[in-house]
Amino acid sequence: MKNQTAGVRTAGPAPEDLDALRRSLREQRAFRREQLRRLSGPRPAAPAPEHEGRARTPDREAHASAYGTRARAAEAVPRDRLAASARMVLADVEAALARMDEGRYGSCHLCTRPIALARLTVVPQARYCGRCQHVREAGR
Image (tube, rainbow, N blue to C red; front, top):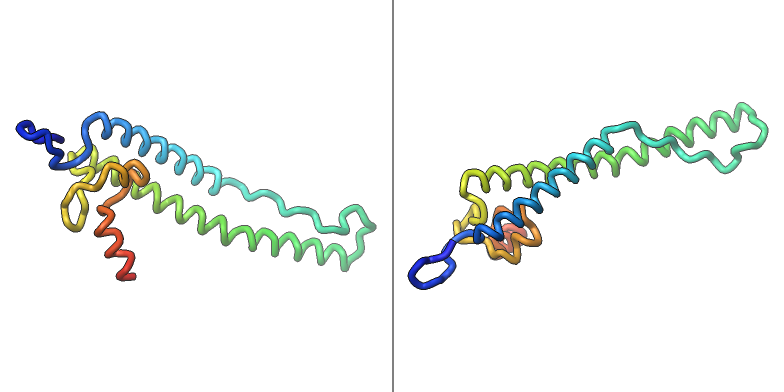
């Protein structure tokens, strides 16, 4: 928004910037939803152990079974973490879209000053201005 008399920016992104930021947020939302859909789908089969194609013995059967179980378990941890991260980003994106709809988008949640357009362009779901974000991170 602009101050009509001085042409000075006083709060929030301009309408044309809001349109671009809204498009970016919608793209992120679609990407995260698809990512979560893929992550919740069936897990890929574990790769075959090195001795695949050799004659099967009880020892090799046990090793193959244990190998497959370990491989699936090892893959589940990063996959679960990735899904949790995607859910958090999706929640932030949806909250940013809600703030846009309510006319509260682009203001810092702590100091209420406008968040710089450069920051919103990089992180459109940002809740804090750069200064307040820095203070929050330093306090961790």
